[in-house]
Amino acid sequence: MKHSLEEKLSALYDGELNTNEVDEILDALAKDTDLQKKLSQYALVSSSINNSNNIQSIDSKKKSISYGFWFSNAITAAATVLLTFIAINQFEFSRMGEDISAKNKLNIAMSSKEAKDIVSKVEENLVDHVMHVINNPDLDNSTPYDVDLRNVGYNRLSSDGRRFNKGEKNFILRIEKKNLGINKVRYWRHGDKIIHVVPLADGRVITIYGNIDAQSAIKVANSISK
Amino acid sequence: MKNNSNSDDFLLIKKAQNGHEGAFNFLMTKYYPRVYASLYSYTKSREDSEDLTQQTFVKVWQQIKTFRGDSAFFTWVYRIAINLAKNHFVSSASKKDKLNISSSDIDIEFKTFTNPESDLMHDQSLKKIKEFIDKLPESLRTAFTLRESDGKSYEEIALITDTPIGTVRSRIFRARENILNFISKELDDEA
Image (cartoon, rainbow over all chains, first blue to last red):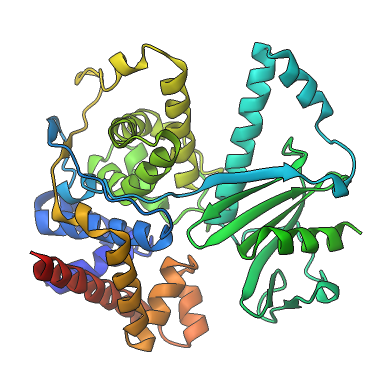
């Protein structure tokens, strides 16, 4: 019985339970602290495995602000942490041509509230874009299935038209018509992968997500821009 | 709210939107470590990250009805968290206001305790966990990795591994159990 509940909990954690079973688990969770703890542990393990870089151990402080819900102790101790993703660098990508955000830059120079809002919006859009790529790497209706990167040494994986590899390097490619308001390559680290966002002069944005360094990603982007 | 493949948490979100506290707790427990991680990368402060994470989930609870499913749930939560973090830095008074939330406005309980698990996730321990995962029986490792690292659905994993969905579900569960047992043993050995 316990085993069955725990297996269902694991499935619900993955969003793979039907409506009736969801209710059963939520009811059980409300009463069973061991089950609550197990859920917390699933979350910790998952977060840790997927964010292996920059892991931090945090000493949870003793604090209790009490009111209504169960909220498992173990999770708050989830004071474990790891960098989900951070912008680690940026640089000019002049080879990609014209400055596509000159207007934004002028506004930034003006330091007006509007300019600050634009900067904030750009960052928000970027965050949305990056999070979307991380959470839905395969949800992509824009990228053509026939991109050929053999000229820079990458083979298309037969199982998926948008995945490429060369030896140890492998990545998912997205090419989208999208104005993210950037004129520089931006890249983020997510676990052991890097997300490179490359704006092209023609208004497209190339996103390369995987085990690939910046220099190689730029080579790939350059080959697509030609 | 859209019910698409974008949302593994569709049922839970829907319930939370209808005021189901247990469903919200589930979501909060699931995403707490990731939100904390994001905020820590932003604030570089454990205390601020913890406070902001709590504020984030208070706000998520207050605003969950406005979530329409246009993005993944975590993306939406993440934006709330980052906006709170930005405000935290912008407002010089923010420190005073932190967690100054009336319990009549919200109805959520946050309790934090020291916990050995928080000490577990040192780099070294994480390395051991990863090594342990590598040593799992192939069938468990494949199912678990496809789910956790690649975000594949059970149906996709079933197709890839040519096994019934029920078997996939069982393998992922067994992999998790093995990992938690390993962690528990590691803690015992260190104690």
